[in-house]
Image (cartoon, rainbow, N blue to C red; front, side, top):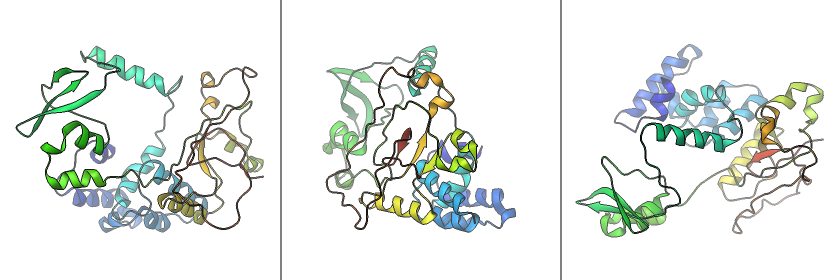
Length: 297
């Protein structure tokens, strides 16, 4: 119920007050009040968790799930969604494309027509309402509504057209930019064997976790990484990693079929690197997000 209320419903009047009441009803016995929902995720994490390891993990997971760590008013989202989402992670057997295929089959079962490899040229607007789309010269009329997952610039300026928009919307669309984001790239690595983390000498189960934070030794390092990335500064190497083949061997090729390979996306040329000594080159450890991963030795 809590997830559905916070994730799937469109915004409504009084939403902030409703979220504050929900936060207090869920965490009131821990001293959390509705006013805490207006805080930043970092502030509420620091207040609720004393362990530096837990703080580091929660910082990273906040931005992993799209909650800005320094965004005021986002503490409520962190409290009502993040703890439950962490415990509900699932792995799509065979790779994420199997989930897309299952969703496609479900659409077909409910009579949905899917037209693939067809670029939408424009959205048809009549009397101030979106009533359909034009794709490859063919009109497709909507029976209820038009839904798009294209970015705001493409949707408003290219598909709808400036002539159908108020000047304020045109200005906002032109000024829209992606980010800030802490994820600079999501490289995937093909390894001969699963990672063996140095920390596993104290707890072997670390090598079996679904999500592993590497490269941060302290909460301060994690926060610095996030804020550097938000600011357009290339952070020091660190990441959150997944090794899905630990649970689904079909996602890894047989040993010896090809050499290990890694891919990474270069950071934008405008991004400066923070001054100071640079860390040693990272050792690849599996799939990661937020830049290259490193294994401490």
